[in-house]
Image 1: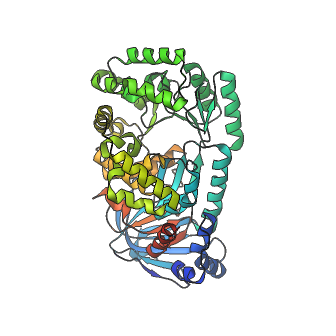
Image 2: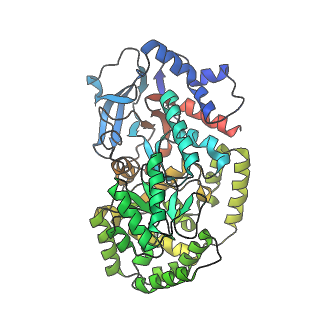
Length: 502
């Protein structure tokens, strides 16, 4: 592994760790990992005036493409200069990073995560994100008190030490009579839906989400009211609805491309009527069991009755309405790639708290003894035919993973998602777009994030290889700049060491 060359005028993070012993490792304790360096920097340069220059580097972003022999200057939490290396002077007192033979990309997004899903894992979430170059996350369902606390903690850690991503939240998702998750809330009537919207707006969510057992009447109420208030709405398209109807109603995005395969079937109306009838009859199952049983009833049939003309109509509707897609192939095509079967993947579990690691290893072994279903394998193959069509038709795509569901290790799962998107037919540049520019555009932040240009956020990832030649190069991280704080490879390795020792 190549080591990053850096000129420092103060002790490194690794040096600080020799001085300070971490007795308890929590999210807050990660502050110690860069405390010595940042304290002295602030004393010498003043609060918020950290200076970094990455010299002679190849810069890559999905807006301006590839630019060789560049220097990038960071001051505080902003990029203040980008240009030909010979034209950029070294700021006085700056940390100098030798980028020769290396590649600099914008900080990455995981646009579908559940930070609070596994309480025992929360202490590892933010460190693993930073180690993997993820500087922004979109939490797509959580109980409000928990996710609000994590968002507040992320702000504090990012501003003080650059040790957490920006966290964008949806809060609880609005479901129907049966609830699928602890983070779900029930809305059987439009009035109940409005009460939930009021609560979500009051706490300051970034967008809203509806789920699979919602009735069409309440779905239309939520979407219309949320849009009227300036919010985007994403969804697991309700099992009582067709994708075309949901998109035409104003739905902003679809998570996991949920129920798209049914809408692309030549007998979609027949299956939709069956689902509606079963939901009207009710069940003694839990919400999660009920929705899964309904999908299992129709998935294989839908895939065996695909109609190209109908699917073109459906995808054309998504394109016309600009209904975004977050495919989350790490979980939706799990039966095809069986990530949990791979020894290299199980190795990532060692960075999780001991009790989580043990549980995941046991679960992975149990899952490995099962045989992938016919429907699961067919769906994985079908997805590979759909993914390349999305950018061709102008349907926006964001990269997300659904971690920590399905044994998806925080941080590492994003790189697996990028590889799966590439395997499904997206070019490396399209994949980078989905993990950098697209989520910024989703939140209207494209003037602040996603590019390496003057005035943009100082969230950067230095790679040892060219991701445009092979997207797996995003794993080869030599440094991360988060909110203007530099974390070298030795810093990142020390974080992993601390996590592994817990």
